[in-house]
Length: 164
Image 1 (cartoon, rainbow, N blue to C red):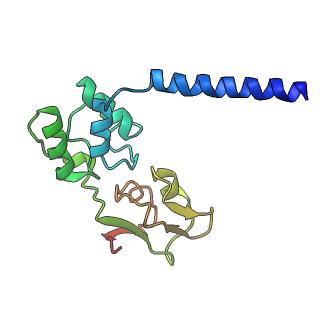
Image 2: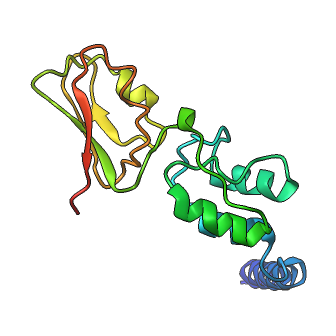
Image 3: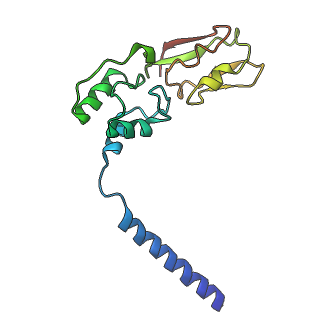
């Protein structure tokens, strides 16, 4: 009985300390990185050269990245970033591709040889399939980044308009 009471008191004390610590050390307000990250599509495709949207947002705040490196976000995102950062909008470089959330990859399953190269190239794991078996795309997850197109040895992947 005494042991249970001591354990309960310790638990309550630790919980209280955690709650107080959370309030004391909580991030006060909205950071610039948070505001920029909310503008980005947050699909973690990596086309900007950063491992995800938050590192790209941090690089924008640090001034080490250009505002036009997000093809999935398109020109609308570039305009919003320019407004937030007080810069002029720039066109998205053609070498980054023209990915769009309005497009989705589709695999012609009759031609697919199951090589798995497309699924390894997909930054958001939107391609399902096992080696030597046909693959398919989870359309809701596909960002339209086109990274799956080049590795396909049989050209069985094409882009099409997204129809939700």
